[in-house]
Structure formats: structure tokens, C-alpha cells
Image (cartoon, rainbow, N blue to C red; front, side):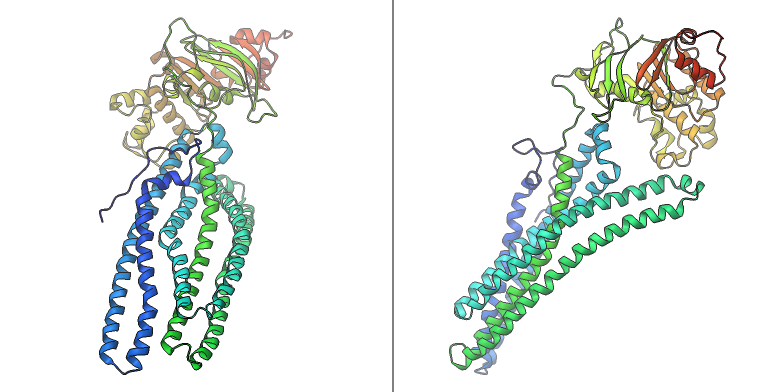
Length: 595
């Protein structure tokens, strides 16, 4: 059989626009037919084996016919060989299908994650997203393999063995049918109680992943405050909660096999006792009784397999819910139908906000009724206390979130009516927390422009005042660890600025991106940006008034509202909040009563 794995491109859609597991199974439909078909063939041959054994006992051993025994032994070997071949084919098909569907699911999940807006990312959280892409998909893969290998085979074998037993002795088979309701009751009891537990456990596993991530990323802070013991206690509590619920699910699942085995073995003992009486009365031969017991054993094995598969399916059911909860999540920030690229109208302001309001929750606004206009090529500072909404404002301009009210325009275009890619090529942002990936300095910088030459890279580094330390570290090909772990805070900030500058954006947002720099480096970097990118609109978000004293315009935020707009000298006269900020930072404030 030629190996072939089909991978879906993007997220499939169901009839109602909702993805389902059937959409991912559809490309493998023939495998879902071929695999069980070969398993059914194997089961048919397995059902023939007791009849052959009965012939060997009744006609071979009883008559001491060695030739007959050898011929029937050859038939048994042939049945075993055919069964093994069918099993191998089914195993290959199950492996291809489960791994292929798992890859398709991971690709669709990863595509979905990259499309999520910041609101959905905040809702799910990084640990939960990681668990859904890894652990939950692994559970689904295992369930898919079991569907192909055992879902048809085990019930078919159980029913087939029951039918064959009935053909041997219908009266004796009544004992079997008395056991079926008991087995069904046990299966229902275990499934109804373990599925909710597995769903709860997946959420607790998300919590454990979050704690691990926090402890790894904040290891230095934890050690600095000697919080190792308390963090260990937090982790122990979370692990204990997970262990308790996992143990409950494990105990319930563990009861399944012994209870079903007990029921079936009790039935076997009863059948052997009754069968012996039937042999004595001449209604059954010894070979038929052996065949009957073999069929009961096959039913018992099939029931045990079903019990094991039930445990796998209960865990997969919880994982399936979580995976498709993510895949079917509506994205709050999407491109409008017929969206066009951002146009560069020379007569339009670079950025304009009209009565913009926004809150991370409906109950509380972070920004309220924000309106201002940024001229093209201007240097604009945004200042305010912690929690005043400065970074949120930058996120709204980048359209990481959509405002609850009002409109935002870039180059005269409503940002809801333009493509997201063109908007984010027009605007470059350097966030508060620099984000670097493992690789080299060059590979990190080329995120902004993949085909940038070394000369362009060095030019961007020079403007960002990063060329000196890059050369000391070994040049552009020097390594960068995950999240810039081998760099200082100031070095990471300067590399982030250089990356943003590489694309020569029309609008550059520096979101407190020089907080780790000394005043001299900060000043030289700002001067270099203004000198080398004179046409770029520069929006500097900061808590240091000294960084924006010479800005063309300063916007002061206080409690999510605009407290004042103007130049440094104008705000000293008109804005109490700005005067207090300057006074607290030892910036000269002329005397006189504030207006």
C-alpha cells in the first residue's frame, strides 16, 4: 500500500460554519473503511478457529487420526497467517490515519492561534493553548487509532461469538444474553462519571502548565525574593488536586476491567457446569463444549477490550471538546469584506481617533472618549500614570483590539476597512516587553524585512544605538537565546527598536521601549530616529517626561481620559496632571497658579 497522508489547508468548515471532527476525518474516509474491513476479516477467521478445534477433538483426537489432526493444524496455521496479515494492514492504516489527522488538527489549531486577536489570546491563555495543541491532540490521535483498530472488531467479535455459540447450543446461550444487561450497566456507570472528571482534569493540567511557565520565566525574581518554598507549595497544591481527581478517574476506570471480567468468568463457570450436564446427556460433544467455551472466552476478551477503549474515548471526548472550542471560537478582530490596503494620502493626518472608548471587560472602561489627531511626520509623546491606558491606546491603533465605541483612522482610512497586513506594514510598534526568538541577531531583525541586506541591518542597528554591543558579541550572526535570555534588558530593547526601524514604517510607536536605557543612550536614539526617518510619524509612549520635552505634541492621559494636549510649555500652563508629573521627576516647573 502506498503511503499517503493528506493534510488539510486551513480550518475546515462544517455545514453550519462550525468545524467538527468529521471535517478532519473526511480526507481519510477510505482508511476508515479499509482498516475496519481488514479487522472484520481477521475476526471472521478468529471465529472459525473454535470450530476447527472442535473437529480436531471430535474427529482427530477421539479417533486417533493423526493425519486429520495435522491437516486441521495446517488450517489453523493458515488462519493465523491470514489474520496476522490483516492485522498488519489495519495497523498501518490506523497509524497513517491517526498521525495524519493529528497533524491536520495541529496545523488548523496553530493557524487559528495565529489568527486570534489579543482578546481571545487573553481569554484562553498560553498554557491552555499549548495543552490543546499537544496533549489534547495526542488523546484524539489515540482515539482515532482505536476507532479503526477496535471499534468495529471488538463488538463484531462479541456478537459473532455469541451467534456461533447459539448455533452450537441455543439453550445454553441464554446465559450469555443474561450477562449483556449487566455489562451495559457497568459501562454506562463508568462513562457517565469519568467523562466530567477528565474535563476537569484537563483544566487543572492547564493550571499546572501555567505555574510551570511562570516559575521558569520568573526564576530570577523568585530567587531574588526567596519565594522558592511558596512556589513549590503552590505547585504541590495544584499537582495534588490534579492527582486526586486523576486517581478518582483511574479508580473508576480500573474497576471496569475486573468487574466485566468477574461477570464474564462467572458466566463461563456457569456455562461449563451446565455444559458438562449437556455432554453427559448426549446433547453436546466434548469438542462442541470446548468450542462453546472458546467463544465465551472470545466474548470475554472483546468485552475487556471495549472496557479499555471506553477509558480512551472518555479522555478523548474531553480533549475533543477543548480542541473544537478553540477551533470554533469567533475572532473579534477580522478583516471586513472587500478590505483594501492602507492608502498614503498626503493631506490626511497620520492617525486620528474620534471618541474612542475601550474596556477589557464590559463593566469597566480603560479608555473613555479619546479624540486626537497626529500630524504626518510629527513627534508625539503620550504620558500618564500607571494604568492610565497608554499601552492600550497603542494596541487599539495597531488593531490588536477593536474599540467598544468610536473610530480610528490611519492615513485617512478607517482601520476596520483596511487589510490587517497593510495596516501593520504601515505601523511598526516596539512593545514594552521586547520579544525575541532563538536564532541570531540577523534572523531576529529580518522579521521586519526578510530580504534586508547586511548594510540595512547595520544601519538599523546604528540608529537604535545597538551596533556597538552587537559587534562586541560577534556581529550579526551571534546567537540569541529564547526570548533573548542571553541579553540584557537594554540590549533587547535596542534590538527591538532596530527591528522596527528596518521596515522604514510610516508610523513608529515606541511603547515605553527605552525604559531600560540610560538617559544618554535614549537621547541619542531619539535624535537618530528623527534625523534618519524625518517623514515617519513618531509616537512615543513613556512615563519619563524628559524623553518628550521637545515633542511637537504631548498627550496626557489620566484615568483613561485625556487630561491635556499641547506642547511642553503649553501643558505646564494648562494641565495640572502634567505639571505634577514634571514636578515628581525634578523637571523645572515655573511658579504660578495652574489654570
